[in-house]
Amino acid sequence: MLSMTFATTPRIVLRDGALDDLPGMFADFNARHVALVTDAGLVRAGLVAPVEAKLRAAGLSVTIYDEVQADPPEAVILSAVERLGAAGVDAVFAIGGGSAMDTAKLVAYLLRSPCALETIYGVDLAKGARLPLILAPTTAGTGSEVTPISIVTTPGEEKKGVVSRVLLPDVALLDPNLTLGLPPAVTAATGVDAMVHAIEAFTSKRLKNPLSDVLAKQALSLLSANLPLVMRDGKDKAARGAMLLGSCLAGMAFANAPVAAVHALAYPLGGRYHLPHGLSNALMLLPVLRFNLQAAAPLYAELAPSVGAAEQSAEAFLAAIEALVAQCEMPKRLHELQVTRESLPLLAADAMQQQRLLINNPVEVTEADALRLYEEAF
Image: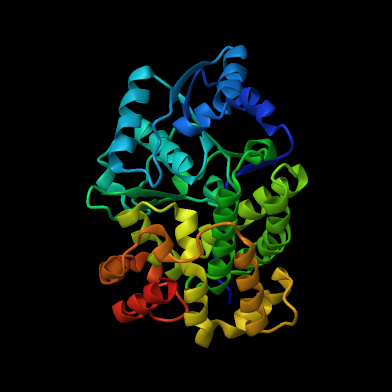
């Protein structure tokens, strides 16, 4: 008999101008003072000021924390908690990519359930309450708005995750206007990142389930059809909205059928070289897909129609993914990003620390396998 558990964000709003709903949503929580978590780049891009104005016009106080960094270090999380706690916020809103949303999740939790951050790394160790939380992604990639996961970079440059249903936000706000200015390289890397989420959820060795399967297939259909469109015309609002939905569905899928070796090998690239997470996933995708072919071929064949493959076979699926990645305006090899060949053994050793992810891979990955995969991506 099938046994499964599925959890996701309880309210998802996708529409042109969805941000207009924000003040009313916080009114529903009886919030008076909102923490606005973002990064300096989005402030400079002019995306934050209109949000702040909407909230203040509705009579809400706002304190902005705009020092989020990519792959947020522990110090950034703790700084945000200290500053926003001192301001007396009673609700949290994040606008940004995965790093801003991951930061906001932990801020909302730690302000309501104070504890040492290192004590909640792992699965279901964060059991307390959190402040009301609304997330609005500016990239169609991470799916963080519907995942119970927050990834943190430790002082030792290791990626660790807090995984708990408590971190699922109250509302995911998907407004395509927030993604219209996304540069082609970021559009490409985050779009492929979302595809990785869908593929790894569908092929996960642990917790694969029918709901995640349906979501992953639909996500791949949306992402593969619309990524070329937004690469050609970044102002295509309908295609941007479809990308946001695809990313969200992929996030829902992998939040319940966890990701595996692509992510395990991507994290050391972020930790050691500070490569963006989406780009790291995109760089490792094809080597890992080929490595997993021995076990995942029937599943790849199932996914082939979702990516417009020429026929329903594993080989056609891989060819379609390779062709899509080839169209993307982004680096394709590790050596293009100043990753040195001498560092590959260190990266392989780092990847072995990601057993939380590697146990989900369809094929066992040894340190020697990881090294070969980095060499293939080099």
